Structures are given as C-alpha cells and as structure tokens.
Image 1: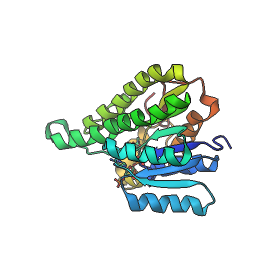
Image 2: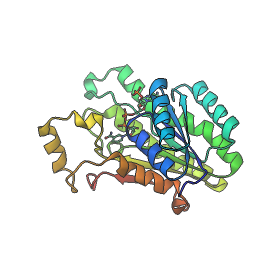
Image 3: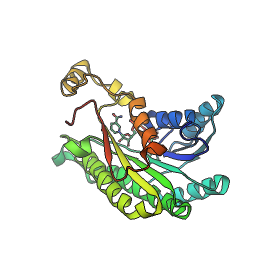
Length: 246
Ligand code: NDP
C-alpha cells in the first residue's frame, strides 16, 4: 500500500490513461478524486471504483475554468482537509498542418493542456504549501520533446508542461513539494485503436521495444513518482515510450 491514506486528485480521469492512473492509485490505498469535464462519466467511473471496494469521489471540473477548479479544490479540502497528490492528466489534441491550423485549434489545445495544468497546479499548490508536502505530476508527451508534423499546437503545449514543471519544482522544493512530468509515447487507447494496420506498422518501426505502451505502463511510473521512493526526484520528465525518443 504505497499510497495508504493519501488523497489524489486526477484531472481528466473519467476514462483513458487518467482512469488507469486512478485505478493503480486506488489499489495502493489512495482516496482517488475522479475529476473530468464529463460529469456523468466521472460519476460512473467513481462508482466503478467504489464497487471494487476503493475510496473514490467524483467532480465535474473544466480545468480551463479557474473558478471551476477552485470550487472543486475547496470541496475536496472541506471533506478531506488535504490533497497529497495532484495529477495533471486532462489533455486534448486538435491536429492540423501548420499552414492549415486555425487559431481556435491552437488556442483550445494550449488552453486545456497548458493553462489547465497551470490552473490546477496554482490552486492545489496553495494547500500543499500550507501542508509543506505534496507531489505534482503532469502528463506531457514525447511529442513535446521530439515534435511531430501536424501537431505544432500539441507539441508546444506539452513542451510547455516540461518547462513549467522545472520552474514549479524550483519554486516549491524548499516547502517539501516535488513536481515531475511523465512523457508517454504511443499508448494503446481508443485513439490508437483507430489507427490503420499500415500506420501502426510504420509507428512500430520507430519503437525499439516494437509494441505500443499500455495505460498501465504510464500509471506505474506515476505511482513511482507519487510514492516515497521518489522523494528525492524533482523537476524531471520521465519518458515512457518504448525507446522511441532515444
Ligand atoms: P482521453 O481523451 O482518453 O482522456 C482525456 C480525458 O480528459 C477525457 O475524459 C476528457 O473528457 C477529459 N478532458 C478533456 N478536456 C477537459 C477539460 N477541459 N477539463 C477536464 N477534463 C477534460 O485521453 P488519453 O487518456 O489518451 O490521454 C490522457 C493524457 O495523456 C493527455 O494529457 C494526453 O495528451 C496524454 N498522452 C496520451 C497519449 C496517448 O497515446 N493516448 C500519448 C502521450 C500523452 P471528454 O472525454 O469529455 O473530452
């Protein structure tokens, strides 16, 4: 039970990688706060965890709306008096080639991925500073390190998360708070299930481990960063990509 009695807030956790992170954290004894823009799905996911005997709460929260984040964090603090772990996971893509990319495609991706991470970190850090303890983990992407044609907005937002994480780590270290990022490569999700066989073969050629990652591969690294085993690690980005970015 590596996270026994800890309270973990995971954004965008009604489905996908965030849901798997919540599952792994709950298995390790954490109370998991399922937070998502989709209220119904967040409630259903929290219910699933409760049926497994885990402690889970759910909140509808749009990470781009700082009032929505503040309301959620205040309610969590009223109930549990603490947030030990913040996992900034909510993220979107709106791919297009540079010359075709519309302003709203650029703005939407930066707003959810980067501004959302800023909003949640700023609000939760206040409570962590008082407690002089906390772990902040943000999901970046290998695309933020390597770049990718058709994903200038996404790459910029994820590279932004990496720089943001280093600054936050420097600012909050003296108060016992660590900030790290996880940069996944291609992970088997609903999104990658839709890839054609040909595209999948092309992708696999660039992955030394010759397979896509699983949400659990990402969740396992998040668990390590959230645990006491990572107490002396801050400002880092751990790449989980089967060797693609070597
Ligand atoms: P999903 O789309 O499956 O899940 C993301 C969740 O975030 C959804 O439930 C979504 O809700 C929610 N969300 C979207 N916008 C907001 C918002 N404004 N406020 C709160 N929640 C929101 O994505 P993945 O699980 O695949 O990705 C999770 C993270 O991992 C993202 O940051 C992504 O960029 C990153 N990542 C994913 C990779 C992959 O291969 N899948 C690779 C590298 C990084 P709704 O469904 O209603 O939109």
